[in-house]
Amino acid sequence: MSLNTNDGSKVYTPLSLSLYDWWVLKISNNYAWHCNTDKFLIPHFKFHLGNNHMDIGVGTGFYLKKSADKINKITLSDLNVHSLECAKKYISDEKLNSCLCHDIFNRFTDELRGGFDSVSIFYLLHCLPGKVSDKKQAIINITETLKDDGILYGATILGEGVKHNRFGSKLMSVYNKKGIFSNVYDSADSLETMLSSLFEDVSVNIQGTVALFTAKNKK
Image 1: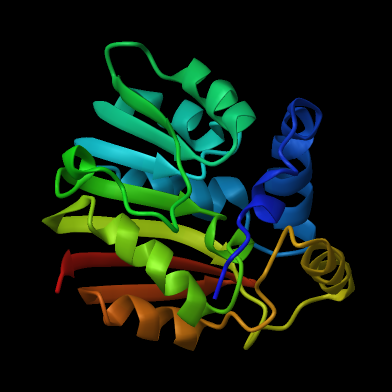
Image 2 (image 1 turned 30 degrees about the vertical axis):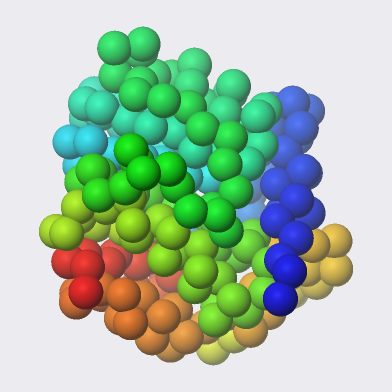
């Protein structure tokens, strides 16, 4: 199966990125997904941040900005160059290892495998094409970058097994039709099953229609 990753990333233009924090992290999170950014997502990002970290799907760099004092060494990875340029502004040169324009359905280079204490993927999975079973290859590629005891963590909007309000249902419909989202069949169970096939310790917690997850200790 050939998966088109461009539809989920091309929406991030300089204009849309200038509105992203307001529209996604404030309006949508509060009123569509019922997962408050300050109460749930920022603490989740900070708590699991390791010494040598990679953030994949960097958005505007919002979480990096909020966690600047906790970051030691970091690598940024995204398919969209505008997002990378936006995010790296919040990282000092001495802390930024590298800034990668990379499609996670392809493996990372040898030098990036097995060295990271933590990898974060916030609001990335629901933008990846296909069902959770299709997205597994991307997670396998990400898992290869972690140390044996490293942690993969993040958050994703679910389409199945949660109750969307009218606002959320409308956004789900529009985003899935445009290819921005591909998450109609994404459920907490399918996410947990997929992660458990790769990691010994997996946790998936639901807040509103968002799954906050952690996966550590590679199999």
